Image (cartoon, rainbow, N blue to C red; front, side):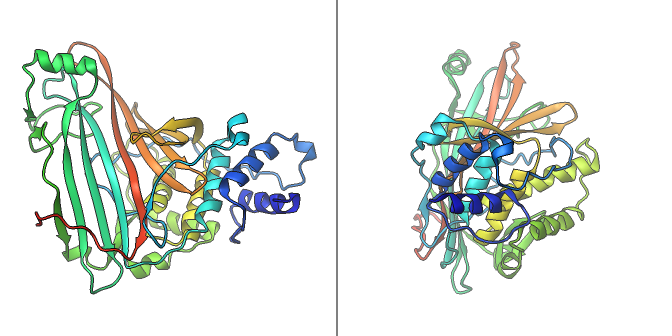
Length: 390
């Protein structure tokens, strides 16, 4: 990559209002060059200065706590297994900023094709909560595949499997054994939810369940997912503007229709955070165009409150660059949110949310809720349906 190309690409990705598509040798190389250029003293740079972005610190809107609510996501002509990429020597030598990671991911995701019969997402959701007596912490897992059919003659499917529940740590296992090593847990309806992501309305079981398929129909038919609280048709998703400034205006107009009551925050503060969440949803949820997803990354790069936290191993053991911020779920109560991104592909590997709660014995325990994306993308394949179907 010659210097002229580097400067052209960097100038483009630094300006959220530009809609042109870059052609680079890869986001790894661009990320390394961005990191190197960011270290050059300002007086030597031949690029426009960053515009100051006004805005409040991104505190949160009450987080959606339903463990099993997972939306569709986006990638290429064939479904892609989300795998970590080797670190470059430049990125290892100089830790990239949140902005650099997001802009490099934007360049990478712009090159993704967007066609196929099905939009497929395969995830593993992990969640933690206390047992009903708040004596120890449990961890449960569930796998979920969603197959959204772009062709009207094909069926929508959701394939899921509960993967079982177990004590979260050796310390929790010791407390679980002391409690008689139960294999199921029933939660009272009036159980306090302090700093818990959710309380199940059905008993939890230690054993894994059967893999089952459910045909999605009714309001699902013709739906491509949700945006800002509304179901979106395929036509509506295709009409989402791809230029960053227009996309931000489009999202802010939709967000302006919402009533963010009950969050305990200033309305503008709440809407700023909803903007952040909807950008994440565009990146990992709707089958929007590569330009739209790239612009969502660029909007995130312009927002305050997001910080780089270095490399991290996601819940499936994959390495990626980590971006963190906080959400205020209730007045004075905060959830830590981490996004694990592969900037060389523009894929979101995982989202991890962490709360801290107090157990009955006074011990402080971390509770994590995570969504790990195993495969996301367009495919012409058909789902492998299990025998058990609803």
